Length: 370
Image 1 (cartoon, rainbow, N blue to C red):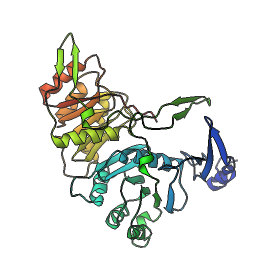
Image 2 (cartoon, rainbow, N blue to C red):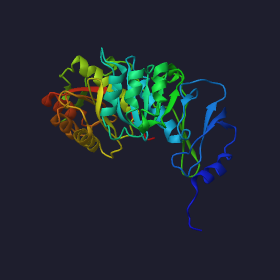
Image 3 (cartoon, rainbow, N blue to C red):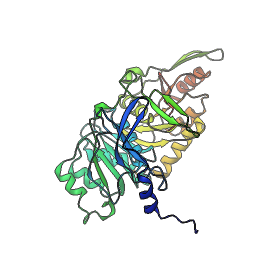
């Protein structure tokens, strides 16, 4: 044998392996769809929904399909993107790629949904190629036209204007994106946001089939008031408190950066300015490396004329030393939020004051090991 596998034959032969119903942790699930494939084309997969419930993902309605149906990665990216936009009362957009946001944006007063999408796309326009795009608003014609200029896998939103759907189906004008899948999600308010909201436990399957069942990653942070000025105390520095106040916009950007970081693979940092992610640092094994990666990505990939001066940044874990903060400040970042918990919290707070950086402490760590 040559070892070459006919992909279509292989997938067709394995689709039937997935039953119509399964029971997980005592709850009955019914098969909603056989998927195009799992994470990779040689991995068959199926999508199940609870038999007795409704939600943003389980109620997905396909308004336009592509050459093939959805993959597991599509669904994971849809879930991650909706997990970002669910937090915002303002118009919001998340561009998701391989279970990490390549960009996200929150609308400022007077901005159109198209402008919000462009801000999210342009954080990393190169990575946005082949992405999943999610909104927390009905998508209009102008926004649809901007989306069709970019090759994307899926776009998902609570609703779409009729003329937006006409644009998505115009494969003559928009040949580059004629295979785009358009999906209407269920109610976004069914997605849990905060600790204490009704939520289903997560299940992680380990290499030998054993399971880890855990509470989902939600946040205690409901508003900027839940991000107090950073404090710390140790023998070397004594008691320290952050004395630099963020501007009103930096406060909004810190909150946005925190919510976006919940869906970033750790170690993760998110840099935001005027409601727009300027860079997302993800997957690094050390904290300062995550900050360095984010700054370097901004320099290499950001397509706008914006600078990092005055930007805000979130970190999903504490700073063990002041070095990551120093790297951020040297790049122009002037407001930072991170969890407390380092033995050197006082050193970090003291250094932030010296550098003129507003430092806020979050009440939790938000590591995400997908």
